[in-house]
Length: 361
Picture (cartoon, rainbow, N blue to C red):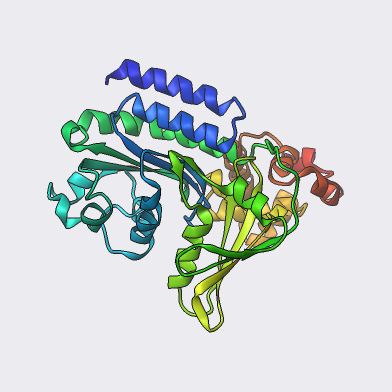
């Protein structure tokens, strides 16, 4: 598509980053940006919980409703090429299926099973990674008559990934919530993924989590249920999901005793430490930087943090400078305010009252 198309797409993404969009709206902007430099027919852009790499929300276009469950069964259970969990560990965030299978698409179970009826030419997968945390995954599939993705298209998509990742990271901290807090809810799913029972209020939460597509797909709940059914006995899958309203929820899914095909899913409001950890993950901090942030939030000075970690105060201050740059803040107060909701700030007020003296303590 050329330099001009990439520049225009980057400008659109930068504007989207500053626009305080709902999660689904931002996903749509990223899809439009990718489409402006690479042609495709079907796509899915899913935000993820960085801790589990399970989807937390997203947008899907073109794929039939019945393709959702097989898609995630393949991703979670089947050996195949370009798995997101593998791509998230790579330096290159972009990969095509044609290249991975050396041109023989029949080597991929995803093609012979899921894509067989579509008649595809290639599948492009993209991971949006900040530091070691995967914030979103993208699947872009083109029909046979278009042929495989070209080297120029891949170069252009790579050029968009950093700004798209920045926009996705910014959206994690957006306070844009249009739905009231709801009490915890429980949903029972049978072996076919059908809801057999639910508690009062669960329906509204499920509506908020439902992914909007051409038709309608099973949402993040079904994906977590699949993982829970195939995990070892007694395992509970716990992840964070985000509704179209912008509300973060904590999702626990576990098979029932004596009937592992049936699972119970509990949805409740994400705890402040959940959302704080999601933001920490999105900043792309190192393990040491994350450790220092947690000490800072407890009110320790640079000297005190150095004593706890057995490193020099100068090293701690260097880490703090890097943390501020990655988080886009210039003080401990702004860092804590970004990580914790207003109702928790009072609890930390006394501990961080000396925040402006951080550089000298």
